[in-house]
Length: 169
Image (tube, rainbow, N blue to C red):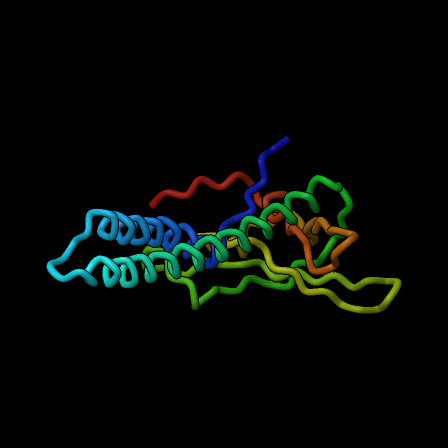
């Protein structure tokens, strides 16, 4: 089976940056405290509070953000593994102007699915694509894998309607 890409969001990327940074500062504060750095008797506590507190805050924030994105990716993987999907029609391609990678903005594919039982229309978005796929679709409908236990979790299998793309930069 072709390995599907679930993509990282801004939360996961920030978590990957904040976690090691926080661990470094927390460790630095603990080391400075343990070697009794400073000239005054209360100086080690200042280092521990300043570096350790900032490091702990960054580490905790980073781990939470990373955990949220890993949980999202695992839920999408479960939806894909369940094999239950609907066919959603491709509505268009949008640029995500709030994300800037290497001076360019990634695209997402917007897909619509109308549930025949409830009459509700669901809007899904694909993972980030770092090229404009507008003229490459091999079909007008894309499989969207759903988690039946949580309707907010879905995986848009955009690779199923795109040819193999080799990106040259």
